[in-house]
Structure formats: structure tokens, C-alpha cells
Length: 320
Ligand SMILES: [Zn+2]
Image (cartoon, rainbow, N blue to C red; front, side, top):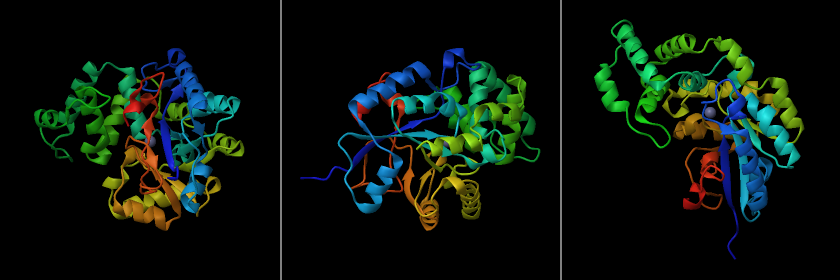
């Protein structure tokens, strides 16, 4: 009989009571739906811990039938205040991937600046404001194509987002030079949000002590980079420096010989894989959507489902 080494790994980001929150348009899992989803998982799957998955990978062990693992990215405080108590109540375990900088420095990550810009303001206002800023900075220290050319290239409908949202995300996440991306994101943030970045960072991310509480209560803590960079796009030295910084700041929470890497944005290349292995990673998590199979998959590149692929959000999981 064939071994069973298949697992569905589910990815979460924000988990909060959206209706009663300050930014109800943030793209997160609303708490009542989250609760329903965990009950669905408990009823239909064997929810396994990341330690069990590591052991299965390292020692060639089988997994239970219908194995499923829960993962939370980015270290959001709402994972601590909403998800963690419910996990405890339902006697479920999960893993949390913390971006080093969030609790080391309480600075807002670019990825979150962009989420909050998009959640706070109509996209029909954001696009022209962004274009104005592009015109302002073009030809100063920075050189990039005209707004028409940028729009032609990057305004394309995505899996989850319409083209104007894709345009804003692409430009502010990868297309513009890094320091200009930071400048423009911060300007838009301050124009729209009405709170400082630091204030929001304190509201948004778990503190070191909260991460400690998770770990002391049986949750698994893994790595998600230091600066939340697209690691696959960085120069090798820069990528290594980012991961070294992450390892150092997360030292208390991880086993240096047996840790799990969760690539920000699912971005990696061969250098990234070589480096994390050299540093003791035994599993890696991507954003490719399908069932993971320890018999067939590269253990450093395990695919994951998005939480929106399962009930009560959708039945997409049946197609993978
Ligand atoms: Zn992330």
C-alpha cells in the first residue's frame, strides 16, 4: 500500500473582526468565518502540527489521513488576539511566521503600508495620486518609463485583484526603485491614514512577548525574512544579510538545525534555497496552490492553499 505523506497546508494573513475594526476593507479573514472554517477543518481533517510535519519529512514517516496544517504569515497581532484563543479552545495547533523587523523595530513593512493605503481610500483616487507622484519624481534621481507605458505593462487583472489595484501593488512592491517605493508609499500613507506608521506598527504586529506566549502554548514559530523582501529578486549578498538578520532576531524561538522557512511573497531562487539549507532549514513554504506531497515535492518548496480556497469562503480546494 502506498504511504500517505500528503498534507494540505493552509495560509492565513489577517484574522480579525472586520466589521467592528477601523479598516473593514482590509483583505482579511473575518472572525465569524474564521471560526466556521476552523470547525470545518476540525470535523473533516486531521490538523497536524509543524513539528509532526518536520518529523515526517526528516524521518521519512507517514502522515495521518487527511492531514492539514495551519500557517499564519507576517506576525499580525490579530492572529494573537483572535486566532490563538480559538485555536486553544478547539485544541488545534498552528505555526506562525514572523518577519524579524516587525518586533525588533516596530516599523511598518511596505507590504502593510500598501494594504492600508488600499483599505483606506478609493482606488479611483489612489491611481491618479500615484501617477502625480510618478511625474514628480521622474527624471530627478530616478528614471522609469512614462505613466502610459507603466499602465500598459502593469495594469493587468489578477487572480484576486482588479487591474488598477494590481497596478498600484506592482509599482509599490517591485517595479520602482526600493527607496522611491518607500518614499511614495509613506507619502500616500500619511495623506490617507491619519495615523503615524509607528502607531500602526504597534497596533498591527505581535510583540516579542506575545510570540513567546504562542510558543509556550505549543504553537510553532518560523522564519519569514527580516524585511519581508522578495528574496528571489535580491542580490545574493543582500538576501543572505536579510536571512542572517532574521535568524539572529528569531534565535530564541527557533531550532537552528531544524527550522521552517516561509518565503515572503513566495519568492525564492536557487541561491535562497542553498542558503536556507546551509543554515539549517528543513522545510520551506511557498504560495503555490495545491496539495503538498512529501513523497514528491521538494521539502523546501511545499505548496499551500489560501484560506479563501476553503469553506465558508469557497469550494476551490476541491479543484486542486
Ligand atoms: Zn508575508
